Amino acid sequence: MPEEELWRTFFSPIETLQALGLRRDMASVVDFGCGYGTFTIPAATFIEGIVHAFDIEPGMIAETRQKAGRAGVTNIHVYTRDFITDGTGLPNASVDYVMLYNILHLEDPIRLLAESYRILCKGGIVGIMHWNYDPSTPRGPSMSIRPKPEQCAQWAATAGFVISEMSIDLPPYHYGIVAKKGNT
Ligand SMILES: C[S@@+](CC[C@H](N)C(=O)[O-])C[C@H]1O[C@@H](n2cnc3c(N)ncnc32)[C@H](O)[C@@H]1O
Image 1 (cartoon, rainbow, N blue to C red):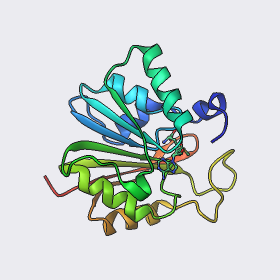
Image 2 (tube, rainbow, N blue to C red; image 1 turned 135 degrees about the vertical axis):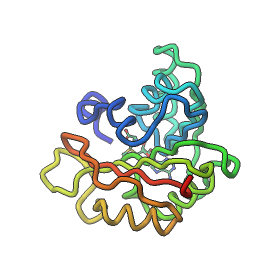
Image 3 (cartoon, rainbow, N blue to C red; image 1 turned 90 degrees about the horizontal axis):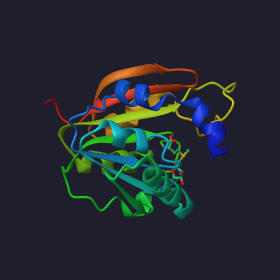
Image 4 (spheres, rainbow, N blue to C red; image 1 turned 45 degrees about the vertical axis):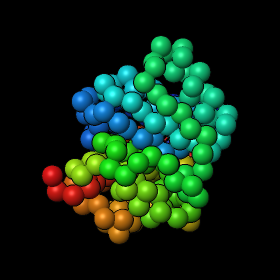
């Protein structure tokens, strides 16, 4: 990850969360790979429910926890955990929204999407965001592992999701996809 000061210049978190289907009345949200908490803290301030934030790096978890404390946000549960090998440990059909932001370039994206599908309630939403498939972006994974929107949509469909919206423009450097579990 680049330094946080630079990282945060790439995003407008609340606008992105709303564009990718987060709703205020959601009771339970999961952030896969919370990093600096760039989206965790805004999501927690926006929704009425709980945000479950997972990261494999203890430093990222500490950062997110401290930031929540400074912001006076109490509706975040943080977990230091490898969600690729160990999943989330959350019950089946227990959450309303999953954030897969800047994470699907990791090894085994279908496994991550399958875990998202498992924990989402029927009608639950997964928001996918990633760097534009464009080598001129100032950061982002190498082009050899950077997924195109069509690739993310195909992985999501393989995991069982129905695509609701494709290729949402999230300027300056990202795109988004919204997908649903089931049709309700
Ligand atoms: C590129 S950052 C994205 C952070 C955040 N989603 C955002 O968009 O600002 C990816 C994060 O995922 C975490 N991560 C990578 N592999 C992981 C794994 N197997 N289990 C849990 N966290 C992981 C990294 O430590 C890092 O903080």
